[in-house]
Structure formats: C-alpha cells, structure tokens
Image 1 (cartoon, rainbow, N blue to C red):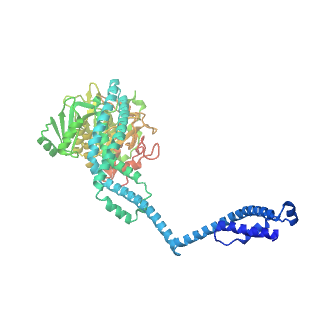
Image 2 (image 1 turned 180 degrees about the vertical axis):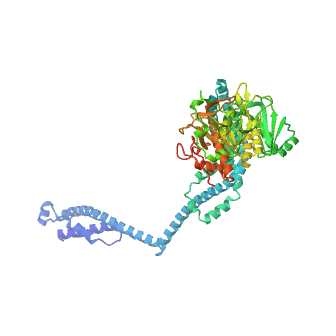
Image 3 (image 1 turned 120 degrees about the horizontal axis):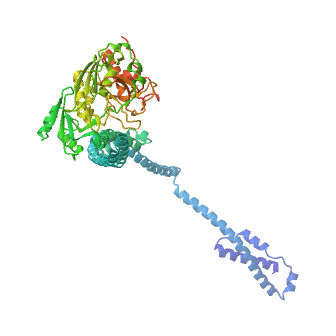
Length: 633
C-alpha cells in the first residue's frame, strides 16, 4: 500500500472516530472530512525514505501526526457545527412552545382584552372612588348649609361667648385702665380700638375656627350619615363627573364662613360692646336696664324679678325698667339670666350708657361764619311748609329773639333736680327754624318738638343717658313727627337700637351726627345703626370737617363748618361739628316727607346728592353732598 493511500485511510479512520465521539451514531459530515484531508501535508516517497529507516517507522509517524492535526481541526469544526445546531434546535423549540401557547388566531386578542379590562377596572375603581368622595363632599356642603345654623348654634353660643367675652374683657380692661388715668377721650378710643381688634382677631382665629370645625364635624357625622349613601348613588347615576373638577373644600369653607359670620356677628358686637361698657365715663354706675313688651315683664315678675323704676313707652308699645345693682355685677350674667326666662328675641338688657354732643368747636366771632341759608340753597317752598321736626338735644332758650316767634314744644327727660344746659339745643333749633329779621333758619314755619336729654354733670360736662334717649324718642313718635334730628353720639346700646327699630317700623326717620372723634375713631352711635341716616360735615368748599368720623356707615354730607347760630342768653356765634350738619339733612327729609308722602325719602336724598371724593359711596362723604331739588307738582 502506498504512503498516500495509507494517509487517506488514516484520515478517514480518525475522522470517523472523532465525529462519532462527538455526535454518537450520527452520520459523518463530508465538509469536515474534506477539510481534514486537505490539511494533510503533501510529501514525496523519496523525502520520506530519507527520513526514516523503514516503512513501519513512516507509517507510525504519519499516523501520529495525522491523528494529532486532524483531531485539532475537527474539534474546531465540531464546535462551530454544534453552535449552529444548538441555535437551530432552540429556535425550533421556541417556535414549538409558542405554537402550543397560542392555541388559535384569537388568543392574543383575548389576552389583550383581559389585560385591558383589568386595567380599566382598576382605573374605574379609582375614578368612582374620587366621584364618590366628590359627591359626598358636595352633599355635605348642601346639608351643612341647611343644618349649620340650627345645629351649630348652641355650640357657637356656648363656646364662643365665653372665650371671646373673657379675652375681650380682660384685654380691654387693662387698656382702658391706662387710658382713663390719662383723662383723654381720644386716647381711650384708640386704645379700645387696638385692644378690641387684637383680642377679637386672636380669639376668633383661635376659638371660632376650632369650635366651628368641631361643631361642623360632629353635625355632619350625626346628621348626614343616614342620607349620604342615597345621595351619592343618585349623584353618581346622574353624572357627577361634571363636578369632579370643582373645588369642594373652598366651597365648604366659604359657605361655613358665611353661616358662621351671620350667626356670630351679633356675638362679636356684643363682645365689643362689653369692652366699651367698662369705661366708667360712658355708663351710669350700679344700674342696668330692661326693655320689653308689658307681657314679658309679667313673666319676669312670676320668676321673682323686681324692678325699681318702670316707665311706660306708649309710642313704641314697650316698657322700660331701671334696676339698681352692686358695683361688682356682671351685665352678661344678668342678661343671660333674663334671656333664659323669656327668650333672647323678646327682651333687651343693657347698661345705662352716656352720650355727649361731641364738643363742638366755636369761632371767636360770628363775623367769620356763614348763615344756614347761605351755606346751601333750598327750594323756596320750604319757607311756607308746616313741617313737624323732632330734635333730641339739650334744652332750648326759647326766649332768644330768633326763636321767640318759632313754634317750639319742649320737654325734658332728665333726672329730677338736674340742671339743663341750653347752648347746643339752642344752636340746633335756630339752624332749623329761627325766624328773625336778621337771622332765619332753614324752615321758619316748621313746628319743632325739642326733647331735652342733656344735663350738666360736674365731672363730665353735658351728658345724656340711654334712659333719657329712649324716653325722648318715644315721646317724639307719639307726637307724630316726620323726622328726628339727633345731634349726639356715644357707644352702642341694645335698648337704644331696639327703640330706633321701633321708630323705623312706625315710619319715623332718624338722622344723627357721624361724630367728631377724628378720621381714625370708632363708629359712633346712634349714627352707625343701619336704620339711622348718618350725616357728616363739610365746609363751604366741600372739604370734610377735619375732626369728623369716617366709616362705611356714612350716608350724606352737609354744611357744618363755621356755621352761625343763636347763642343761649342772646347773640350769635359760629361753631363747627357734625352735629351742625344734621339739621340740613333733617329739613330736606321732612320737606320730601311732606311733599311726596309714601315715597322712599332716603333714596330720593341719596340720588340727588353731589358725589364728592372717590366715585360712589365712600367712607369720607358717604353718597355725597346734600342737594335739595324742586319737586314737580
């Protein structure tokens, strides 16, 4: 056998063994064998013969070399073939597995649909939960609005009244104590304003919010529990999606705030009044007042209440009682005791407050002043109209030459033996109705009903009390006056407010001075009450009086600076103040009442007013300067 043939046989044998060792019984791979054969070196017999001694030696060496090289080449080829075969087998298995999983053409669509349904259900659950929460809150808002007044009322009254009263009284007492020592009324008013504002703000923020929050929460839990589920279902069924974007929290806060504001407004005012009540210069000490209809007093008598002095008020259909009290009594406790017997809407209980004429400023001479008829022009018909004008002021010197021919009916409502001052009342009466050749008032033919309520106090000057004001107003109502001119100012009082309300119900218009406390002063009463027309003063150039009060309660402005008027005892002088502006508005109102009965006189006055200051109603001039206009027949 030749060497060449021997080599080929060896290659085939080695290749076959290598392939079978890797693939088992699998058939050989021609490509691998071809590579192995081609890889064997081409040697000649001569070269071989020279290298080895005999044929056996050559065969052995060739066999070893060929086996070694072929095994190496075949190993590399087998690795590549194995990798390709494995990849192909894996691909087949994956396809087979996918075929098993995907049972039909609708399988993927079914799986996707299931996944989508699950996701939609989760999202829908979240949306419905949000919808339900929104609907619950929306239902709560509606029910809270209906129930908060009656359900929260007791909680607010019980908790807020005690906390605000203690805070305001403690704070104001400390401030007033310092202010009273200084003896300056303006300082007292400023201190009260700052103290009350701070105390009310702190108390309302700290107490009202907490108490209202608790009360509303309890009310909602108790009142809404039975109806929320049904309301929510109905709301969801009706398409509550449209309300999901609304801010429920903001709406709830606004509605609760409105409900609470309406309910506690009177409580806040009461707390402020209580702070003012401790000013000993503004009250008659050791006394409290009760005013109600006669049957209420009968009920109180059955409960053991005894009253020292009782005055009938036939014009208002009420009864006024004065009660002596120890110096240390608490008006709030007294008021609550009476209210517990007859109810808060049937009786008024308060202190006997003090009022002043506002310390008008006098000029050194009347030569520099302006007479009423020159200050503002009225239509000529006012000279002949028999108006019925009431005035609550000091006494009037009816012997003065300018008033000796004026129709004036006077009546005093002061304590027995009190000395009646006459300066201020004489001045107002002359501006209204003086009738003399050298001085004429606005309505010289008017009939004036002058109620004297001021008395001379050794320490406090000219003062009036709540009792005198209420009794005077009742007399004027009974006298059938068209309007009432009030030229005094002071603190708020429950009895006075109730009396003014009765006057308004009987169509008696009350006009009052805004006050001379200065631009930063607190509102003064009775002008600051809604049923009263508040009048401020301006000079001949339309500039507001420098000491006039300011505030949103102002209605009209009228001349009140440097006005010439009669002086008690004889002669004339000129003065400035808001009280001197009131007669102009009172005369204009009485004229319209006489010429246009049944009309809204106040609206007629406001529409004809000349706008001053900022456009529209403002806190300096109200609706503007009084401008009486002719009335067509």
